[in-house]
Image 1 (cartoon, rainbow, N blue to C red):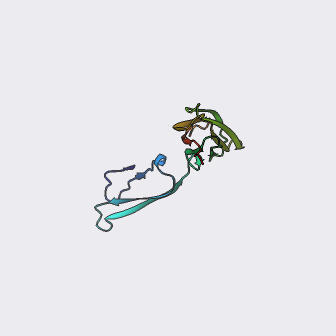
Image 2: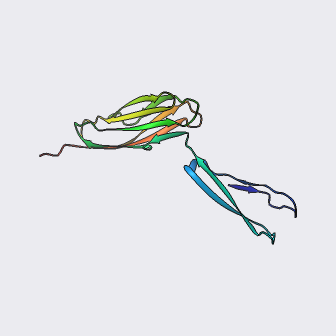
Image 3: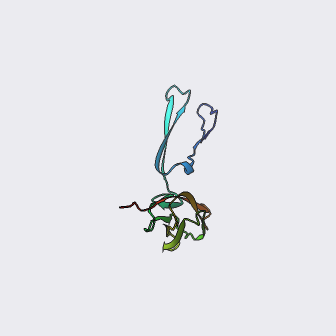
Length: 159
């Protein structure tokens, strides 16, 4: 978003404000804005906005888990949850919508800063499902985390 003084008298000063919506940007970025004027000695000026957006919480490998496998064999996946703030973060509550398909365990690997959510399929018959885990935190910038889980459990092929 850009805000600027629409009219600046000759020899006067004006302001230009450039903003980035960091909810849609991750990692390093560089944005360019061109300012046009009726000054014949310098018709345009390029302004650059550079930076790096670090998420409040990082989910590794991402916010999606796949549980693909065969009935009767351990089908497990995990996501590492990392708090990128100096202040510790607690995970207050965990809930999901796949009670008939998965079991889970949340392990603090660095209490307040890093956790591992391990999800294991326990379907009693072949199944295909998609569901969600929600984690409530005490971090005001990231009060709720969502992780999508996709499962495809099939019978063991006959030999």
